[in-house]
Length: 517
Image (cartoon, rainbow, N blue to C red; front, side, top):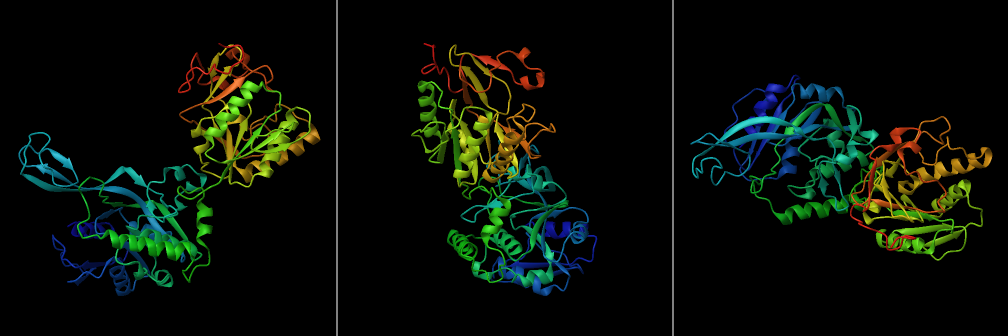
């Protein structure tokens, strides 16, 4: 029903020598498409399927470029020229995407409008139950943008990858994109046929976005989003507003099963890269396993009551992730490494490095012997491989008085990052401290300051778990405790200052604190 609107929109917005080939697959357009010298219509009385129809349309074109789009989309002015300006021979280009506000239902009694979806049962304003008219709006919803998407381990397309937008790789006008919805993509016509067109063995419908993405990347090419232009797509997001043609769940699952076999078993004969290369390129990708490990370190001077409580809480929170404990005396906790060294800053750095080198996981959390960690802390996945991440949801609790304090701070006990990044940092740190000694201007926390004495130039970012970490302060902490704002030379380190008798979610935790009843 929206094909005429789509074609009219294309014709009014093209600025190049662009043609339209519309394949009417088993049904005439209603309303009909007017004759136009730039429009070719192909009609099939019996449906041949989306993939066959797309390949047929591409064969009818002699243009340098081809773009496939759905029958319910709108476009930016000059989108065709803008796409041609940034399309290398081995690229697939996706315009920036917005949701399309295609129509409203208007009550014929009171003119109240209902946003697109199934025809209303009754008017919310006047309770009319019969008289509604579809009013075409045809405008992009500019606050509903979609630039990045991915597919999970089941090869299911997942839209709106907001976490990826925060990565440095997502900055710029032309940016790599893992996957797209398949509603619109653009490439050189020769390239389309080099990739084999759309693989009709999938069946009629399903997995088109995944197929184009895998072919684009695994062939040795590239798939990008062009933020200089856009298209707007009608998403059927309202309950009861479905596809206007029959869809078989069995057919969709066939397409997914075939897709998994093709890509996960590396059976596409034109691939020069394995699927694992694509996952690594965009890692971490939700739905794909990344391994996590914990480096837990202690100087063996902690009160046994606190030590035991923190160990038990850690075991209950890590969801089976491997724990490497590094101690100055032999210890039965996790996979223990015993370093016969004297307590000190250099020793602590060596402990962390020993634990990192003993692990074989992708991601590592640093955990201290006197901290209580909630399970949510270990659910975090760092968005970038070259950034240090600190959970700043931390409350400090005095073990003798029960006094509780929070202020926003990045501290080593809340640090998480990719293991390779941490190993690089702590190897340099140990080497520097052994050579020059430790100074506080060097800092304890990787990436947390820009002083010239820093170890490396990688940056740090903060995040907050909804349940905080409890950092227990006692008489044997390696670093001093500060309980008043006037103890800070720079007041910017006191942001978010709070004092309380109970910790959010945890409540009172005096059951194991020394001297507190």
